[in-house]
Image (cartoon, rainbow, N blue to C red; front, side):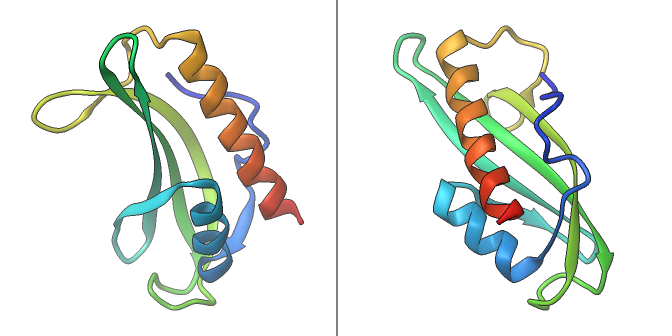
Length: 115
């Protein structure tokens, strides 16, 4: 599932502030390379015994990753169900409470990045 109209698409932040803000909300920077990074937030659904991840894709617009002043731009936000042994299924139906929590976390991050 792609999250539309989050207000995050196109937002820019330096790496240090994005890492700090994401961590405050509960996101973790899992994947990164020289010019892109993803931030994930894990949601466990006890009703279905499933795990979901909110994934925020970012791309470098100035600098290289691992330098705190590198500027990143948010490209897209996804919500997917974790699959074994690894991966995310973006096409599966997501329970409404999971979608609601994901939207709340994205709003919290947006507020921090816009401050």
